[in-house]
Length: 208
Image (cartoon, rainbow, N blue to C red):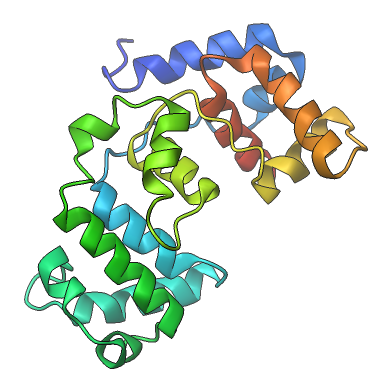
């Protein structure tokens, strides 16, 4: 059977990771295969990430629908329109004052042509993170999630993600905490290059 072009790298990643790491090999063998992510609008992905911060998936979906309702007829938050909206208008969608300011900061960044997909997709992990964390409210974790999912880049390791930490503690028997834990996780992840993102996606899936 011939795989679609976008699925081929994931098949190669599964084979590579299974050969490189026996722990991952067992996970990959027992969970449904991870599939390629759609290449998303980075601007929209950032807005959704901010809306989702520190709330449940269900609550985030409900608020996002209300946000879309502010931008009729198509629901797309054009940067020029979003940037000009007041706190009160954005609060009507269920956003906090803080999140409203973060969304406007993303819109301003987009208006300055700082979210060009073609350019950002060529940056290294660290350069990409430094670029996006210039935006108020966008931290390292959010930047990593954008790389891993919106850009579907294969080699990003999110050592600060709680799910990855829990999965690695469980599957690798890690007992460290704090910085020693992050160092140990990063050491283990070196064997996953150039497919650390794919490995993370399997670790997340192993927790389901």
